[in-house]
Each structure stands twice: as structure tokens, then as C-alpha cells.
Length: 273
Length: 273
Image (tube, rainbow over all chains, first blue to last red; front, side):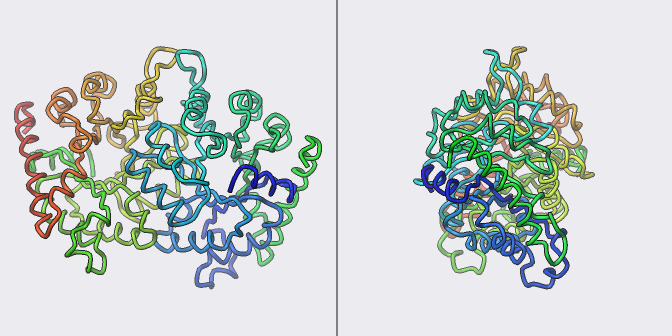
């Protein structure tokens, strides 16, 4: 999916919501536990209930890997079920030496069919480059994450004064362009979005941390949007587990709808519709 | 496995060799391709041919993930086949927000039964901590990697002058001790081992990059060993693909034997036997 197509979907659905499919088998409602593949059955209903309200789906791979081979099958079925009109993100946070990153890239892009993968920057250029070699696919590089530990290294000033996350963002722009590279920027740092837009005016940002982690949608949107919106804001637990009974999908839809309505309002204020 | 047990195995086998089970289905000899699980059949013969010459096995998970659900089964069978006398490393380079890292930790430690996991430091304390909560299990944190991209961020001086990899090493020592934390330090930086020993005198180092990547075993051992050896030196391609025919396991044994003999000589020079 190109950047222009993604923006067209955002305008059509008046939404830049990404639904995080972090499906925890222990939190799937009772009545689905008897299904042959409860994780897939759950995801299917979540997708049915939210697809007109969001533009992207992001399974975090840990939730599937924790189930071994079975989890891998649930993931593939889920991915195949997501409509082509939605951007798909393998939230994998991978990154290894060149020949190994190449294998991960092939697995996520060619074999499974994801549009994008989240990649960790620590190992540098040859750990990221293999993911950038796939036409029409995207790298979403960790820049400023939403968690407490983001303060350990990401904010540390380098000798030239810029914090590590800024160095990561600037360096990565020499590896790929805004049509193939996005950044992860946590919603828990809303005050940073203006700075980040100065460094990367055209790039899309994947923004986790709204909802359970406490980020502020309005603040980050007003500081972080660009003229193609440039934001994919993720919510996982706040949507998936909005309800816990037989009507979980309805509750998920209500939670997603609430975010989408806020987003529509913000897009309209920013004159992006 | 404790640090003392690991050192006892090193002394008994006169070896600190780790065999990297980076099994590429495309490079498995022809005669094994008809097996129901060629990857497992290959690994089984490699383990049979090398277990008395090494102390650890390290499958890189990319090679298994690239095969989807089937690969996950080959990995579990391989892990179950490795003798209890060997230290096992899930080379996964994971790291995510706390609740997600917890899932990865549970998958690799409790469900699969690995002794250790490689973890990326970029996301900081709460991405690493969940792996340190498992009694008797190990985190192997990326510090200075063996690849070209290690020069992009790991060597960059922070405002206090120390390079990022040193900051990572020092910070991580406030999270865990030398009985549960190792570091990855690439063999391609032999000149750095003396400095690294000053920062972490007691920690084991996992050292990739000997063989295909060109690292120097003698130099890194003389600069990097401590009084419990403190090194696990990995070779993957140099052993697995030493031969390509029906006698691949014999060729693998010869390659592993060569490294083990050099290691025995170095351990003896260092009076560690």
C-alpha cells in the first residue's frame, strides 16, 4: 500500500485508527473457548466489528508466538481475513545481522503477506536495509517508544547534544524515504511530537500508548499531524477487552467508534477531510 | 544452568564453543530432503556430531520463523533433543513493552524450555526486566554486535563521552547480576574486549562473528577471558555448512573439533583447566 492510498483510506473512513490484535487467549470470552481456534474466532469478530472504523491492524507477534505452532496458524488465518483495504503491521520489533534480517523480511512480507514490520534500530543499517528492499512494503522503525524504559537510552543526549531517538530518526532517513519508512513514537510523549515533525515532516508515525498506557489523542494529533495526516494511532487492550462477555465485539465497536469520532473531529479541524 | 555449572562444562569439555543452529532449509543436503522434517533431521545429526566439543547451542529464531508453524515444530523438537548438559540460547533479539516482553519470556523459558534469550536494549528497563524474573534463566543483552551497522549507534559517544554500548552495559548491571545476565559482544571488535572486561569483569560474553564474519579467536580470548572463562564463542555457518554432502556431519565435527582444539590450547595457556 502506498502513502497516497493510505491517506485516501484515512479520508474515506475519517479515521487513522490502528487496531492492535494483541489477542491474549486467557482473555477470550468463555463462549469462544470451544471453537477449534479461539484466537482466530475472536479476531474475526473484532475485525468484522471494527473494519469500517479503522485503517490498519497490528498483531503483536508475542501473543501468537506464546502459543507456538498453533499461534502461528492463528496469525496467518487472521492476516488472510483482514480486508485488502487495510494496512497490516507485524509488530515484531525484529532486527539482526543482514542475512538474518533478510530471512525475517522474507517471512513477514513474502510468505505471510504483511504490509509492514516494526524493526529495532540498535544494530544499525544492515539490520534494517533488508526490510527496505521489498517494493511496496514498509519498515516501521522504533524511535521513541511509549514505555517507561524509553527514558533509559532513547532520551540520552549524544555528544552533539541531540538525544539518541533523534539520531536514530535522522540516520534512518539516509536509508529509506517517507514512502517506505515510518517511525514508532509513543503517545505518552505528546510534547515531543512538534520536534519530531521538524525532523521528519513527511513520514507516517505509528503511535502506540493511547488508552491503557494513558496517551492524549488530541494533543498528539494537533502537534503530530502533517498534510497527509501522517499518523496511525493504535489501540489494543482498550478495544479488544472493552467487554468480556458474548457481546465483546459490540463493546469493541463502541470503543473503536468513540476513537474514530474523535479522529473525524480532529481531521476536520485540521482541514484534512 | 548456573554460572558455576557452565564453567564446569567448559572445563570438562575444554571448550567454550557455542554451535549456532541457523539451519537454512535451502542448504540441507539432498539426501535429507525426503525426511518428514529435514530441518530437525539435519539438527539431530549436527548435535550428535558436536555435543562433546561444545557447551552451548544457539538456534537463531529467524531461520525457524521463516518456515511458519512447521518451523516452530522443528525448533521445539531440536530443543528437546539437545542434552541437559548444554546451555541453550534462543537467539531472538526480542524486547517490547513490559506486558509483551513477559509473554516472550514465558514462551521461551516456560513453554519451550530455553536457558536464555538474546534481548535488544533499545526499549530499556521494562523491556528487559520480565526476562530476569525467571529463576535459573538468563538474559543475553545486545551490547556490541558483530555487524557493520554496529557503527551506526553503538559506538556513538554520549554526552559524558562513553559510547552507547558502554552505557547499555553499565545500566543493565543495575537490572541484573552476573548470574543471570550476559552480553553479546561481536568477535569483529577484538580490540574492545579489554575495555569490556573492565566494565563487566564477571559477566559471560556471547561472542558471535568468528568464522564467516572474520573474528579472531585468539585475540578475543586473550583479551576477553576471565577466571571462569566468561566466553561463549559462537560459530554457525562455519560448522553447519563445512560440508554439503552425505558426510556433512563429519565435516561439521571436523570444523567444531578445530575450534575446540584451539580453545583447549587457549584455556590451558590461561591456566583455566
